[in-house]
Length: 321
Image (cartoon, rainbow, N blue to C red):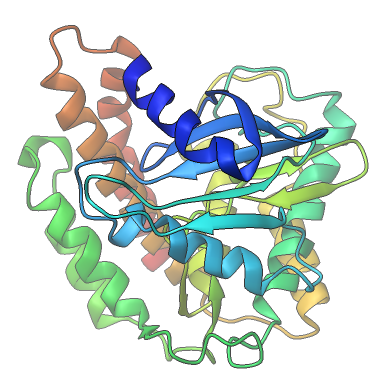
């Protein structure tokens, strides 16, 4: 983000009372800033200028789901204002309240997230928060006009990504895709799907989850898409990283129990959705590695993830078997 763009955004938001803008870490698909609105701390999300604000860059669509959840049991920031702009030159944006809490992926990041017992409870709180999201009726929240995404469409989506990367990065991915398609379970009733539900996209304090954030890829679809993704990110063997919390977090089976108890029903075929999640992770990380290799100075940490991709596909095959 150049100083000129920051100055332009500051001038644009000044009439609304927003001041003291400064870049905030995060926001890969949109630009994120901290600021002040009177005596209130706020966060501003802006679509990248010069690009159509569609798909994951559609910040107003993100604002829509956060607004819809404002009176629900799912904790989210408050949307304070939005502005459609005149894209692509003047990108859309929204301003939301600042939520306290830490956002760390304990089994992937090396960052300190708090005492081990509190972090372990954070996984349990997250499982129950995910269930609270999945019990909501999209129609009752005014989201009936959203298309329903079928589980097999998720497979096709990540196949399109994998078709653009070096085949050596993800050997045998087509066979895994074929098995996923052949064994796709019947869909559950449509629910709100966050799309990237994991502790790294939640804010939490010592008491629990304070906000669910980063709604770039939300949809209406099978809630087990979220569950599978959350579960593989709660499994220390998925990425086999050395972190302060390896060996101290709840087993995946316990998290499934918390999730099902909060839903008040059993959920079948979770293994298929964990396989889908491993397939999705293979696709997203292979794309990250591809772009990293094109940089003048590739990040060795990102390049190291290339070694993990065959193991992710092996895990997917294990779930499917």
